[in-house]
Length: 404
Ligand SMILES: [Zn+2]
Image (cartoon, rainbow, N blue to C red):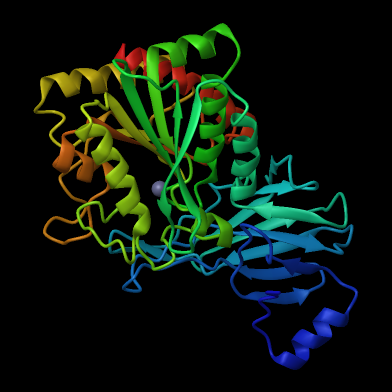
């Protein structure tokens, strides 16, 4: 049990025996930092955050908790401990009034909370909730856990043209999957990657929508898997997803940096993923388009491989892909197409993203897509689970069109 009461023990004990509301995060994917119960209707909730192997680059993005025995009057949750650091630059945190939390009364259907107040001086995000029931869950974005993936996997095992390989184990000995849909040879190949960062649950809902489209019994599913090979890492950091982590693997390494170093003892995830790609290439196959999907708070963009601009063939592919996404999907970019530098921190080892590392080692046309959790003008709302699933469908078609 992990009650996370960082209070004087006597007071904590008193709070636990009282009949008032209690917060829990001791479940799959759950996370809070320190909790301070101001009154039965008012809590300070720290966002736990995570730092890297050197104690740097703190990111406090993910929170996911359950409230039991809630009163029926309005409750206040002040989300605190938000400031962080990104690529070694300090910031006041990713959580603001632009990132509305979601609430659920059944753990399955999630709606955005609109009664928010952001104080940028502290900083602090105040959430007001008038509970419709005595138990509810609150999270940064609709969660997608290892159990959700396991349910999808059970279903996929009955589908045509689905293959699974376990390419390695994580630090905590969880399987790392490589899934193939529509295998075979002599076809163009798309290779995808999801959840390099454990908090980014939105990208998993997109993955689910895409995978269900590719394995569908309808004409579209048949066409997409007959014409192309689809390979993917559906869950790159299952350890982080299990513990309600943010950005780093069990040893503190960012799985979307470090693609320029080989350290299997502390980053078995990257080692296994790179090896499977190297073997595919060495066997004479191609990767015609690679993409890693991510979430950010307010930005949405497509980043192409380093040197993309200098390579006309890759620039053509990138422009075609970007244009297709913009015109045929709900992707709503906040900046134009651009190309990655050779490293996120030039001269420092362990600072290459997957697209930078794959370009350096194999000249793969690799892309990184960020999708916002904030309000999306094209949708007219912050993205819901249904929006993410639908984008997954659209993404399958856009990827096929780009390499066609
Ligand atoms: Zn990310």
